Length: 361
Image 1 (cartoon, rainbow, N blue to C red):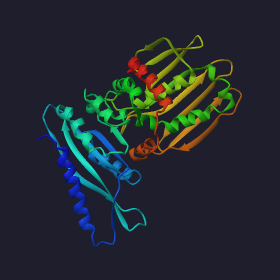
Image 2 (cartoon, helix red, strand yellow):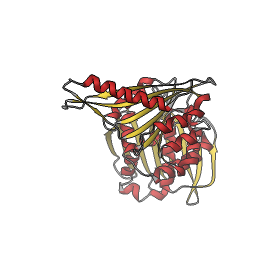
Image 3 (tube, helix red, strand yellow):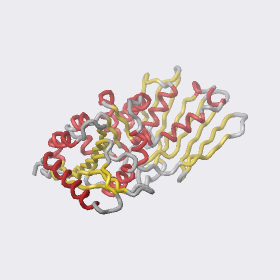
Image 4 (spheres, rainbow, N blue to C red):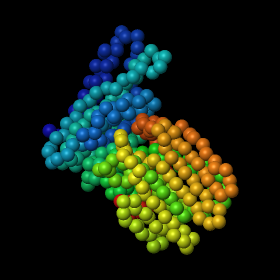
């Protein structure tokens, strides 16, 4: 049955009327909060609790009208929606804060109807954000129209089966929207530590001599190279000034991307070092220079820590350990929601990552 946006709007009004009536006489006042419209696209078989927990946490800092669209496989015509409230109690406040949440179930065949349903439900004069973690929606011909509904688009390609294709597709449309990917946000700590390692004089004065990068990752048997690995490689290639002249790949279990730097060969080796467990992820990064006084930089993720070591000839190795807990979706989303404009470093890294993925993936 087609979804009627006008009827949904009436259901939202009735919801708030009922909540207000229930709160009368209660010592805790009811407060309706909304700072944006957040549209979430997720595949139907994904654990619904993961999305719900992330949204419940995010609501406390970014209250919003949330529209969660769960996309199922197949060519059926399922297209249903229901309205509910999400409420929480701020610490030390005698009030209950609530935001509305609209749950939509749609089949792939029904996605063409989605833009016309979503548009009237977006709160006027407030930002609209699209958070896409659905590979079905992202690969649908209608996805371009869905992106146009929200000036700010946040992807999560790390959850896709073919991140190489998704990176390429995203790179094609990056200039049209303020877009990022949570795979990039998860790399923030890694990139900060790489930059800090290059503050060491032994590394800084030999930047032009770095020729080898080994990117190690963990992934399950059915998964390919994670999006975060391609994005990290893209960022490093750009930062080191390596060129695409004569770029090639040595195929094999551990593919090697061969580029050019200052007339010499520069290499990026992609290496799977074990099972991904709960999910694929970047695990270890090695960078080394050539010349008479070579330098090696190593970063390795160990449980909730990141170990960094710098080794140089005739120098004592320098090492440090920083806290690096597992990433959670709500803080990552909150970090991205504070970014209002385009991120040129991400866009440049994405374009390079897409090129790498096309050759290696």
